[in-house]
Amino acid sequence: MPHPDTLTEMLRHLPPSGERLHLIHLGDADSAAFFSQSRPDLHITQTPPLLTFEPTSADALIAFNRADTLTADNPPFLAQTRTVLRPGGRLILLDQDREDHFTRIVGVLEEAGFVRVLAERLPKGAGILARGEVPYPNLTTLERIALSAERGGEALPNRQREYLYLFLLIRQTPNKPAWALTPADTLRWEAITAADGGGAAVLLTFTSLPKAVQFMQAAVKAGAIRDVNKIAKFSSEVAAVWTLPHMVNPTFEVARYAFTAPYGIDPASAISGEE
Image (cartoon, rainbow, N blue to C red; front, side, top):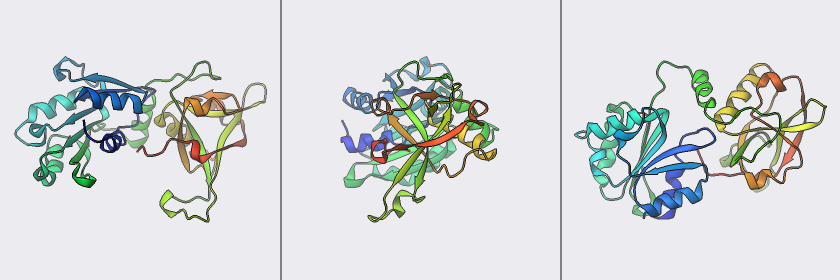
């Protein structure tokens, strides 16, 4: 099994998804167990024949030390991968043995039709990590977000069941990226809330990043909310201690006229390190 730090870095490259992410895993059982423990939202299918999957049925595919996948003379594997991955789905490759592939892999994946391709040498000789994404055909950015937001997690007036993760729209003060923060800066996070039918404040929560982005885009475009500069992810254990009830996956039309005072959130309670 690769080092846990390497596996954690691979997880960081998983795509935004619905409430659960379907991962095809072409690797050892220990790595699959690590992924499952690190991300409870993963539905992992291990080492299957790719031809057994329905087209566009998977969110991501991870493969290890498959030198044949990094060469231009093996189009069947890359073609099959593109078929089973949904638009926006990602192929994530780790090669611990062949440093000479680093200069070739970007071109190979782009030639196979992947976009947003990158390759990087991991620290301490851990190998090459490469990623490619299946393109969305003929869709604008807004249309891609809307399509992603459709996957999983129905709109509910209040929390009626537990979710693995919830996302909040956050106003961060000071409004700086992480790399620009100094020890003198004191972070303050405030989550956006709205009023329910009886006028009580509720947290606006979302079961996936695309759903949160879709809501925020509509709200910002309409001038209904301002200064939201972050979307943060939280575990269900953290969400359970919030004192306000939740409005899960609200549409903008439901909440647009009812925004209320923001709710303070501890920045340290969020999940960090994911793309």
